[in-house]
Every structure is written in structure tokens, then in C-alpha cells.
Length: 343
Image (cartoon, rainbow, N blue to C red):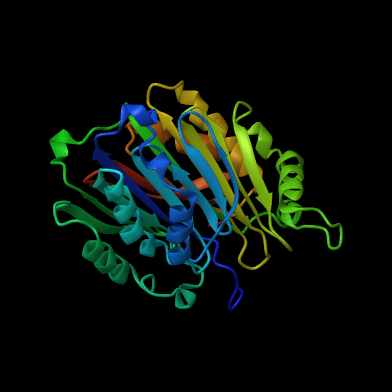
């Protein structure tokens, strides 16, 4: 393991707002935020926009460190490296309030950092992160919970904080939607090399990203999605996929010794239950990692049991399982997998 390197594991923040959305503005809500306002938010986080795309449902931004998704009443921001993600909370609440929107729920999740000592305030510990969030969200978000979901792999656990102003029985579960977050480490070295730019070829990040998307088969994970991708110099890759009102996203840190890739997607329990199996299998096959952790949020038993079915044919064995209930999130299931040949 490298002594120091780029931190692949992302921090993820999801904020839901409520309020009157003006029909005269085509129900755009948070999508009315000026780009300059988003830049101020990202300046606090210490990252920038490198590419963007939108459709009638939401806007998706590829960042210098991961991704940002803006819906009319929801924002998801996911950043890696030594970004200060939680510093986005005060300006996001401020700009939303200017649009007549108020924070309803907050969810923060992350895995274990590979290089925890390199993280700046307020990310030096989960305890510090929780204190910072609680100091910067409205007091009416009084239903709160913080927990570290364990696994049998010491380097893999799942940190979760949620808060909402809604009593548990009143929380809307958004048509039984669920989110799957996949974290992969120890990527296959040959496959990871595909995410390095060739020195001196003069290609832009947009062109390089498109080539990586096609070369690696990422474009086949969801053939119906429009992909906005970007390749970093000398290495690294990010993409956002948009398909109707659903997003997917991939981020890759390919350096040997601390290689990492993530895949995230959303679905509904009303989908064909085999869809998530096919999607996850395709995503993991791109990287063939030695270790995988998966968090499934707001889901039924049928969804998280399908996760194991997706990975077993790839030679990955489930090593641990944890389940917990959270305000504003419902059930979160955390599973870890390693190559079956490992004991």
C-alpha cells in the first residue's frame, strides 16, 4: 500500500428541500440556481466543474473531483480526494432559501478513507463530520442518526448520518426508489491501465473520456443512458449517465497501490428485479476488483439479495452483511465481497 496517494473513496451528500415551486419557472426549483452560485458552493468544497449535461428532469455535472446532480428539490454532491464536501451545506441552504426552498432531509455517507490522515477539516474523523453537519443544518431536522456500519474487512466500513424534519411514518419513500453505491479496490492492473492518458497525444479530457468509455465497455452498462464523460491527465476518469429521471456515475483512480473505482445508480422496486443484477455485473466486470463493498439504501429484501447474485459469478464471495434503519433513508444494507480464492 502506498504511503500517500490520491484518495479515491468519495464523500457523498444528499439534500432534499421542500417549498412552493413556481409554475411560471417550469417547476425548475433548484435548477434555477445561477452557475455562479454553484461555483461558490464548489469553491468552498475545493473542486470545479469540468463538464455538464441536462435533460428535462435534472442537471448533471462532472467535477474535477467526482459529480454533482441538481433536481428541482434535491441535490446530490459526491467528491473525492481532499475536498471539503460538508462545507457545501451552508451555501446550498442559503441559495435554496433564496428560491423559497427549505431543507427537509440530509444524508451523508462515505466508506473508509485509504489515506485518512490526509483529510482536512471537517473530515478528519466521522465524529468531527457529524458535529459539523449538526451545527450547520436547521434545528427542525430533529430526527437524526449517525452510525458506522461494520464489516469483517477492517479497511471497509460504511459511515452514515441522516437527519429529517419528518416523523418516520410520514417520510415519503419516492415510489420505492433505492440507491446502490459500489466501492471497488485493488482493481485488475491490466484493466486499470485503460484509464491512463497516453503521454503527448494532445487529446482533451472530453475526447479521452469518450474513448475510455467505449474501450472499457462502460457504454454498455446502460445502453439507454446519455453519457457525459471526462479523462484526467495523466490518469483517472469520471462519467455521469442520464436516463430519464435517473442518474448513474463512475469514478476511477487507477494508480497501482491505491487503485479504486466507484459505481452508483438508482432504481425502483417496481423495476424488473434482474435489471440491477445485470447492471452491477457489467459495472464490476469493467474493473474486476479484488474487494468490493456495496451500500443499498431504501430498499426491499429482494434488492439487496440480488446484489450477491450479481457478484458470485464474477468470483466474488460475500464476507459480511450489516443492516440498519435510518430516518430519511429507510433501510440501509452494507455488504462486502472479496475474491473467492481469498480465505
